[in-house]
Image (cartoon, rainbow, N blue to C red; front, side, top):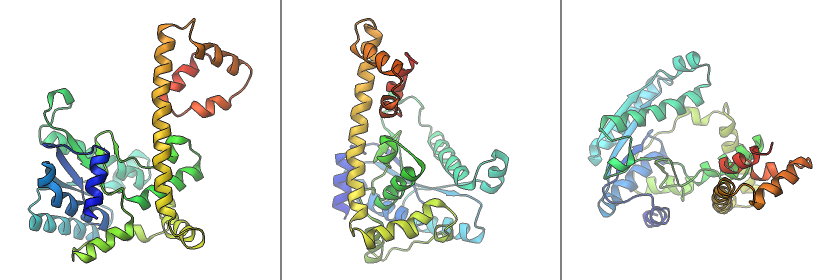
Length: 295
């Protein structure tokens, strides 16, 4: 399994020698497995590894238990450990956001603070090394995200799910399914904890995880998650292609607006009342900027 992760890292150019990798570790199976795999390949790839834990102040003694487990594992594996505490329930009320969204915000803040703590410059050109945040999303998370986006309404980018790399974030175990990760931990006799909030059906994503995906795997195709991951890859490539072409067309229109074929085509289509093109190209910032020139 480690070889698959190494191949996935290389295929997506996630890491290079000298990078600083801050691994987000909650104490759950996915993040503990990711940390163990990263530690196993650290010498080969030549990156610096540390673990960052975020205490959300939600589950009382259970949250303290999670933090203590991660700290203990990091001590045993000789991995630098840093913890950040946030009163998520209080912030949720203050910001008028749900606790799930508030949790996402404070986790981003924690990694930003960690980057600042190690005096890493905000300007990439001033850095000899990259600061990478490693998150432990897996294939099941990707499939759940695709279904959630599809149910709420989305486009190519939403259907492409979770990306292997984006904005300084890497996801080295996105090539693995949850069952493989659990088997890996059991095989290596590695401890992990289960967040009780993941067992509840209170969140839409949990309902997809507990009911929708299992039904699809049981009643439709046992390789549902694998096939959805492959579809996400294809859609991600299509989305990237359209974005690049949109940028090229925008530049053409800037340089020669009177002769750009796209200008005349869009003007005729939009004026004729056809919004199908808008739906096709929307979601890509460059394409939308072209379209708004004629709205």
